[in-house]
Length: 376
Figure 1 (cartoon, rainbow, N blue to C red):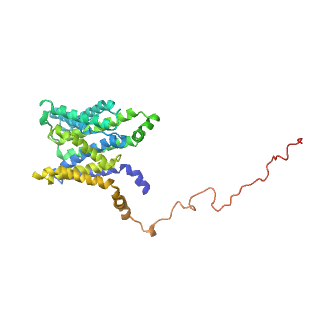
Figure 2: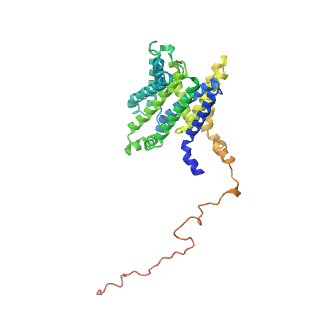
Figure 3: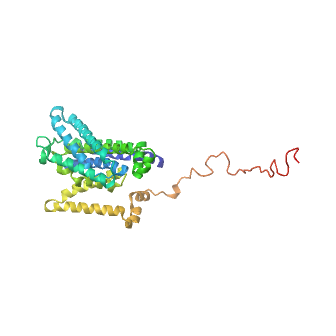
């Protein structure tokens, strides 16, 4: 069973998300989901795609990017504009497909344009450049004309059928996972993680660092643009104020909270943070709405302290899910099978009880005091 589990472990996230997609799809088509639940599922799917795509840059490549919301903004505006133009003539589904391709492709193009000069920088300098890119993109769309992208009031976009949009979003999440995990587990993924661990050593072994950085940045930007298109279809209006610096930080928090370089952790953290954010919006209404950011920040601080404080190390090791599961499925020693790898069961060419002997020769065939014939 342990061997089967290890083989299936890389595909468990596909199975879980696929099963949940089928369950929620059936509930949605039969009227078992409320509109608020459907809207939350859309937001969760978008957050997962953003967190997983950013995890490629921050978690696996080891570079700090603060402009992820900028790539999402490009996809949301351009994909939303395509949907406004194409939907009256092509229909809902073809317009959605074209908008997804256009939004993702243009965001990937911006990823290449920004990545070529920016990825030669490191650390804080790269973070500043990507942050500046996000603010520039947001300002451009905010100051656009009303006829092009709606200006400060935002771009009005068609709302896709809410009973099926979250299903499409979850299917795209599976596609994002497939691309990300296959890339990371390939030989290219090993080159990417080696750059994260030691860039100088990676260069010394012949790895094209700039090439792999650009690939990761482009793929990450593409899925951020796809998430932006889904956001435009999930709302009636796309406003540039949504894609501010704070939203990039929120996506980064999902990655860091889930664990650097952990795709499953990013999925769980994105789900929890989105659920928490939307529940706080529902609970804290009226005059209490000003407390939403305060409670949200406090909860995140407590989670980070719990995950990293050394004082809670023993508690975390004793009561984590893995330890609790091990206690739950504790075996009775009477039912433990005999060890199949015992020494008396392993086939061997030499029996264990066989006496091994080596012929030892006490004298050498040639000794110094006994030379060849004819020697005196």
